[in-house]
Amino acid sequence: MAAKSETGFCDPIPAQFGVTIREDEPVRLIQEFEMQAQDQDNEQRGIKRKLSPILDQILYGPPSVTWNILGLTREQEVEEPFFQIPSLNRVIIFKYPNFKVEVSDTAATNFSNKEAALSDDRPVETALYIPNDEEEPQLGGYAVYLRQKDAKELLQRYVGIAHDGMTDAMTRDFALLRMIDDLPSLDPFLLKTAFERDKVQCNPAFLQMEDGEEDNIKSVIRNKVRPIVNKALGADADETSKTQRFIDAIWDPTIPEAALFIQAFKIDNKEVANVFSAWKGVSFYQYQFEKNKPLIAEVIRWLKSEKSTPIDHREHRAFLPQQEMFKQQVLKKTLNVIGNINQIFKDFDSCYEKFINDGDPVAFRNFLITSHYRYWLLGYCCTALIHTRNIFERCLAEGARGALRFEQLNDMLTNIDSTVSSKSQGANDL
Image 1 (cartoon, rainbow, N blue to C red):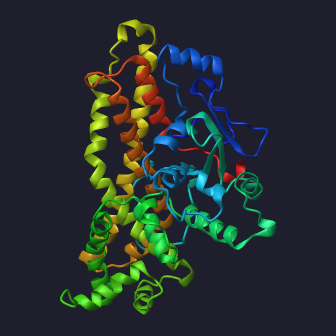
Image 2: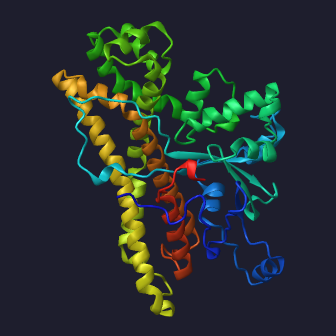
């Protein structure tokens, strides 16, 4: 069964985590403790303010999790901000998991000789974080989930999108939010691909892609796609220009060559956009996972090693068994996330090899048709591992010789646990 989050969107997060979620309002409030006297006392004693797991993720998560429009707008001092509505340029966009099941708790799916139906579920939420104080977003603020109840009312209240009187700027910016909500993660490559597909102009400063990153990713995807195109269309390996036109169709399903490819796989026209985006997305996450696998392995080795024993363990002897149980729980969830990813890639590779080596297109076609949901699961699972590594590095930087104190380890485990946990309630239950 899935590892379910102990806190859903509607559940109050325990006070010791430093966050309160208000149930008496439809908007989700992310509010750090604001007791000035306590803060001043902590500052005098050199105690660092603790952030809740979700706020830590919003403020310090990797680009795939969080898109700090507020920070980028202020730092870049761009002449043309990303959004036309000024208040939207003062938000942080983030992704949050919302899936009920995990695919690694059963055997591999048999994609041969079965009816395939497209799933349009999106098991990851998109939200806007609106800080109370733009200068100090760590002090708390509001989070509006784009698919929650009364989202239209909340967007009007907090960012000024009035659906009853939409201006051109509001229409344009709301379309951008929906486009972003249609992606499982906020990776710059996926954002750029979506913007190019919908002819949206975006200042490169907002995407912050590394030099050569886009070319590397596209090259990996092309190499994976090329044999499929050749097999599906009966093209020879030497027919480079012909093959390239069909590969281009994967990036732009509207060009004429895409029609033949769609026909070859018997893909319904209404499913084309989702199928093609999921195909590219699965290939992208496979590239990303292989790149990050050694970094995640290092985190797992550390959690299993004696280095994860707190430096001051003698002072906390009474609580060590409880912390050890928590550590094992976090490790199990992390391994389960990896299991999800590996199972999806095993299914993908198995269907791919059946088509390329055996000439049987049925399994691969069915994988494509049903890949949308897996694409979204992959998106958050891969993102969760990247953020886990991010948390690990930040915590160890505050440790000593690769080890942590009891409270530091507790904080790290709490943040990782929040990251690798899914939730059991859908957006309609908000």
